[in-house]
Length: 155
Image (tube, rainbow, N blue to C red):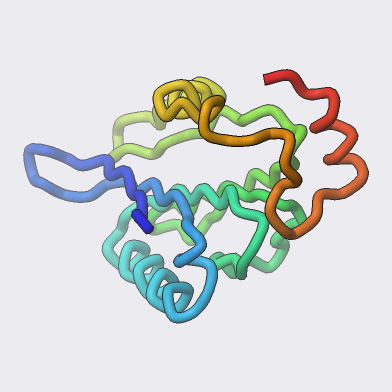
C-alpha cells in the first residue's frame, strides 16, 4: 500500500512548510496509527503546517481534538506554532470544500480547490472503469440518507 504525502517546501532553504497527508488504512490502525501520530508530533514540533485528508470511514482517527465532530470523513488543518486546528467534517453527499494551504509568513494561504483535485484524480486514474458502482460499498454500512443520495447520484 502506498502512503501519500504532498509537501510544500521553501526551495531556497529546502525547508518543509506544509505537509498534506492523505490518510490510508495503515495510518488508522496499529502499529501504523502510533507511527503516524509520532509523525504528526514531529511535524508540529518542527513548525510545519499539517493538512490531513481523512477520507476513510473505517479505522481510528489519528487526530485528537476536544470537539471532534461525528462525521464519516474529516479534513483537519493544524497551523504551525499556533496549536490551532480547523476542522471540515464531511458526509458523502457534501460538496468538497476549498481549503486554505498555509505558506510561510508573510505569504498568504493559497486555496486548494478540492472538487477540482478530486475530479482530476478520478479522471486520471480512470476510476469509472475500475470501480463497480453496482456493488455495495465496503463496510461500515452507509446510513439510509447516504444510500438514498447515492442511488440518485449520477457520476
